Amino acid sequence: MTDKDNLLTASDDRKYPQFERQASSYNPLHTFQLAKGNEKHYQQQYGDMYFLRLAKLKPFVEEIAGEAWEDFEVAGERAQRKDRVLDVQQGELCWVVGTVYMDMPLKPNILDDISKDHWISAPPAREKYVSPTGQDQIMLEDESGRLRLVGQALKNEMLVTGCIVAVLGAENSNGEFELVEIKIPDLARQPQRWERDDAEAALAKRGKRKRGDEKTRPSGGRTAIVSGLGISGDEADGLKLDLLMEYLVGDAAGPSVQEESAKISRLIIAGNALANASLQSAAAKEEIVVKRSQKKYGYDASSYNPAPTEHLDLFLATILPSMPVTLIPGEADPVNVSLPQQPFHGALLPRSRAYAATPSSGEIGWFDTVTNPWDGDLDGWRFMGTGGQPVDDMFKYVDGDDRIEMMEHLLRWRLGAPTAPDTLWCYPFQDDDPFVMGECPHVYFVGNQPRFDTTVIDGPLGQSVRLISIPAFKETGQFAIVDMDTLEVETMTIELFGEP
Image (cartoon, rainbow, N blue to C red; front, side):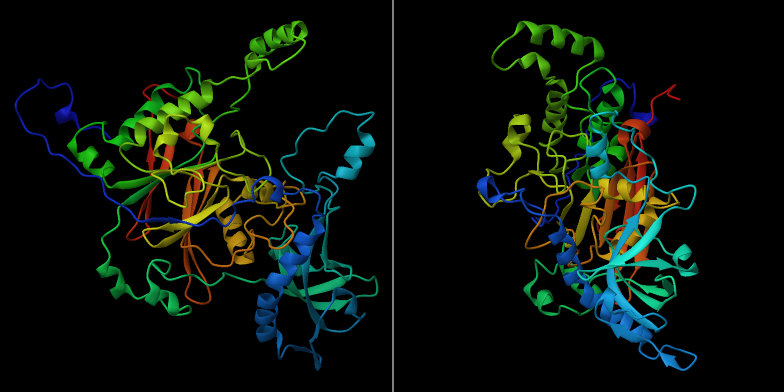
């Protein structure tokens, strides 16, 4: 990122080039926006979410399984379709659709937690739920009952609680379903580029994207995606964050680098912009305890540390005059913990909110605080991204650690957060489950992952999805830049001299 010919030179009368930042088209969706005030309730049972999920995805799985197993035979016996799990008969070759449930002894159990609450401390968080002694069991369930799945085919499949699958096999004498093959919903229909912006393209719902149509649109710029800024408000934020800010606004290095940064048309912050925003140091906590013992009534403002949000607000307010920003919350940010996480409250960012649209105006602001997960259209492409919690929770269910493969399975299952509400907190939806993907994105990114990775996956109907795993910037100094014409991705790294 350095241009040595333009560093430490004497001032002169030369005219330096001026670069104009590339404009972009931005059309966000509000798929994960929750109701406000009294319209939001938490008295509902979570079981309705599983029934909704099964009802929405079962027809797609049945269509795929029916085509694949229509003529499947073993020893002259043709596989029969069963409507319910409990309709499966012993020794009969059949297939049925249901919801996967992982019975894992190491998985958190709320009933066990309640029973032990009075006599044992909370257990430490586990990195994996997978039992080293092989005690895990995989079940298939629906509204009628539950069936245990066994067989060699399970070793080749990645499954977690909540995904909807069709299974082919037969029940053995032990009441277990001997599995032969599994089918999943696969990628959903993918909208054409500019479909939401072009009425003519919207009519061709299953038509293929025409390359010729893109020539009528202005060429796209680039989108920068960063996650895990981890702003804590102390000196640790320092130089690396300042270098990122200077690169984005075009103040870093020489004209060649500035020209490249001018092509970036939008910044997306994918979760964990803050690091434990309201926590104080250990010494400060001891002082707070003493003050609380002396204070009898009222709110003690000393228990809140405003420094992280103030630093984030200043960081954003410096960038916003130069480029638009989309802010996605994450696990460490001061928003609700359960998914879908709602946007940052404007009062936390008084400088930056001047660039945002007024509440309930229906307009799209230059500064857009959105939900986690989030989806929307950028330069006509459908983007979908999260702060990382669904993939992090899915990681605990499986043996491997390939985050890109997990992201691919989420898309092919058509579920943004399959393990919610089992081990991932979420809102108890009643009438609809927004985590079920109605349409397949062109770009799917996940923040706060161990390392950067990217690939492209294809679907049975010509779908093509760019997957991007983005590491925490505070630990790695890395962020991704997406070319909005080709969807190619490059990673940028900011390193400090002498940093290990």
